[in-house]
Length: 170
Image (cartoon, rainbow, N blue to C red):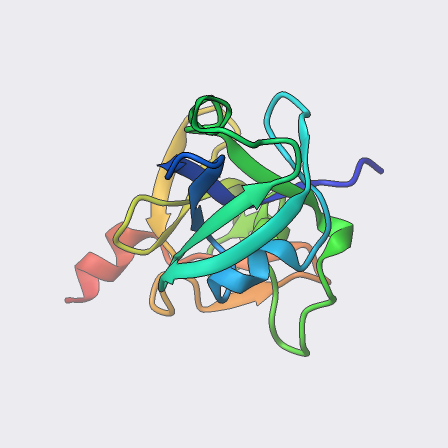
């Protein structure tokens, strides 16, 4: 089995003239970005965190080994930063990583197949599941307790109350 990569952050801009960058982090705290070892980009470039300091609630200023000037830092803008899933600690009982949802069967409350979780997105207003149906079409479902009453990682499934059903009840 190939070790899935987990997105931990995205380089948003250069910071200063000594090669630092600002990184929007998706870790519990910005300091967590450096806790899981080297980071890789989409192209497979390996970046080692040499120094890191929190800047905002979801942002860190980072200096990577080998990046020593603003020009090199600017070339990192827009780069997504990943670690292998195996680098993360096991989740606590009853918890899961959002990446673990990808590939789960999506079922309605009666157990009828709806499709498969293709991706988990966050466009700024909360997490959204992308469900791929057997015909290849996809739909987005807000990842809320009302829309997703059950997640069964061990069973390989997720229960979804389709949004149209939730609207009919209101």
